[in-house]
Image 1: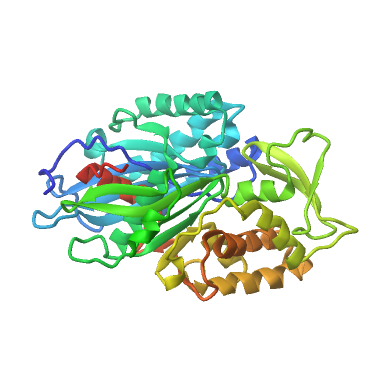
Image 2 (image 1 turned 90 degrees about the vertical axis):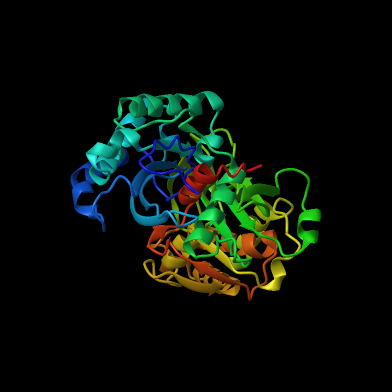
Length: 437
């Protein structure tokens, strides 16, 4: 049972998700101006009058590789309920991600201050001092040199210390990849009504970010756990007086943006000032600069070579093969929710509606990849990388995780009006001390 409210919540909250972006000072400034001028117009009114004995708030930052996002949650605690009720979520984001400022960390402060304005407009002033504000960075900072990542976090800490919100110990940090997957699983199963002691059926999650990708599900067969590789492929946490054992793994370096670099042969390459990285996954006559993580790469198609789905698939297969473990029971038709770039690229390809979401089979990604790759000129205005991205998603699902082509995936940006991310799950980590391990 939760303690009576009001209360001070020293949340150890963890946050995620990534949106593709071109970094740079000019774009960052434009994003900041847009948020500053438009924040007031996007803030909803609370559906219930503020009552501190029943309502409390949490401010959570997800510092991803391609964007920084803020979630401001409003919860209602009912005495008879095991879990609080999520009454409202305010969400906003700024591009690029913190990692784009690796060489000029002083710019991070402006991003965080403007997102905190969203929190101030959402949380009643009288609740500021008791409302926790936490930032968790994901793959973007995990991929940086440690000293550069720490410099960025120090800037965030300075801004948080100036804010009127409660900042718990360890409130600004880099999140472990396993927790990212487990907390996303908790979020989706809570929002779909499966996070209940009486409900045994759950859903799995697939999260594809810019720097990493996660898979998490509750196995039905003991062999799935027993056959998992040694290391961080199994996660356990305590809830409802029992221990839950999940298959969960985060693949750092297999997010969509880093996979682009690997496919192009640009990952960790030298001589960026003069090299051009080519791929049969790009239109033959395409050549341009592409930026990620504060670095700009010159990329192009292969003017006199092959292009299309088959040669592209062979390129991305080399990025996936031998790296992704295939869990024992994925071929049995388990239900999985897929979000982040799975959703974004499905929308770009016209497979589903961005707002409503929907269901797709793995073969739908394959069919779309073939169409886009074999008609790259037609789809170039959408994105010159659409062929590469759809092919990578297809390869990751089929040859990586081992899903059947007939496997049905539920793609949603929101589930029951809340963002599908690990941020909400982190709240329950505080409430129940889940002891993820």
